Image (cartoon, rainbow, N blue to C red):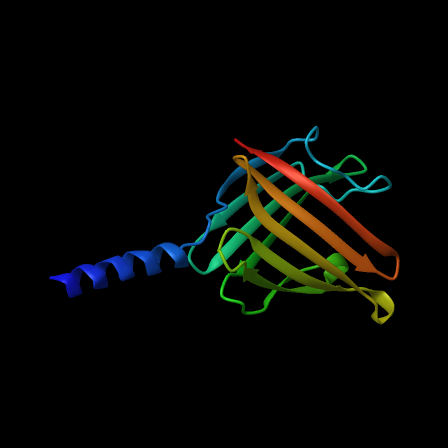
Length: 154
């Protein structure tokens, strides 16, 4: 009986530590709590996330010069490279990695540019007081930038 109890306890503990956060939902940006780049921001006004065991789908709604834009990425959650549409018909390559405690997800993306240069983008997804928090850092030949977006669930 002790052996069965220990086995069940170990199984429950193993499943609990392997469980990952689920970011699914419709999220609207909270501009008063977010931190934007002073010169130019790529902050989406809304993100719609659906998550399965193996794929995170992120639909970003933004506007640029009065035009509404929607970008959708499908990211593999098992560490395999994901390829999605990038700038001007390019293909951007992303790899996702869970933190050790499975409480945050880091997505590292490379976006090719004309002339052989590329943009390196890192996004960290986590929860902060019930809000979705996305911390972005990017670097390219133009320089480095970072922003922190906080979203309220709709």
